Image (spheres, each protein chain N blue to C red):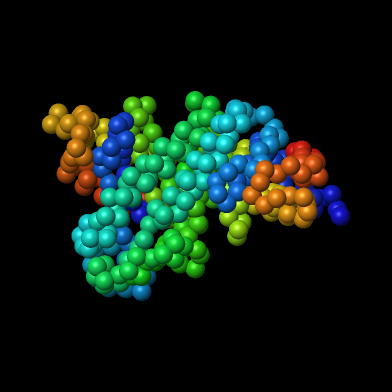
Length: 161
Length: 176
């Protein structure tokens, strides 16, 4: 299973964390080197702009779909995942309206539990319980927490793939 | 025609069907079983328009995987969205990037089928329902037979074809 990207949005629709994993293409996979490269280090103005736009587009998508699902299924309904021919988007929303979104390949099983685990074991433990981390994120500072990022990296690379 | 081949899946719960034209307008909406909250006509029109937009966005946020270690600055942006930009490939290269196809929630499953001409069929079923594609193909077949072959039907306009209603209703209700 491949994880393409992961986003956290706070209750003010602000993207407070985003991370992309770019797997190496199959043709050069045999070469040595890291299997995951952060998107920002891929360079180029286009990539940076694309990632920035992506988080807004992802938020717009999950926000619209969530509202649509609530309208149709009732207020206690929640949308879990959707897939296209190319990827699958998993969604988990905490009772405090923090939204966790993960894009994976189409064949992946439901990641609801995994997203819940990221929230409970990583986000709550390292970000919420950190007295120095801000509660609100105005201006897009986001989750800037080494411990959280490292554990997320480990969780995604070891547990999920 | 044998009965068994007509109902290959056994129990299937279809809540409702929505057809959206290529411009995002609602052209058909019917409920077949209770289970979802019924909305006003206005809300359904809004839903159709919203879904049309979301469908386009879900296609554009398809992850792009770099093909090789070439400088991204030299690549040209791809046109239309169906073909990846040069220097990038989509996760499933052989297949064109599509918009949302299946949406799962706790209470229902939404299947979207887009025809080559851009018309979208939205089918709301029970989450337990298995092979929805068969149902979708049959609906498309009925649409082709009773809507597109109706000489009085104006393209992109709301579907008011009694024969379509009747056959679709009989088929969807008959199979559950």
